[in-house]
Image (cartoon, rainbow, N blue to C red; front, side, top):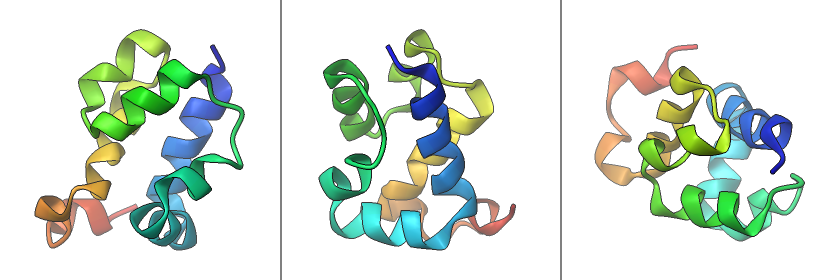
Amino acid sequence: MSRYHLNRFLFDLKMKPDTLSRALVDLDGALSGYDLSAEEIAAIKTRDPRQLRPLGAHGMLSLYLMRLDSEFEGNVYWTQK
């Protein structure tokens, strides 16, 4: 497992608008810049933060995976840093 890269992707998803934009359009392309295992990629694609915790994702960072779900797009919480 590559906990650093998993957490790095989640942090970038939170802090870098270009990472979020790219992930919304081409998730596979966005993930290609990180050294992630197949299991980590599959967990990210579920868009369920609970799948990431057993893989070593930080609890708070894993919540930012929900930014990929259009239902949460307008939520003011996700726009804060």
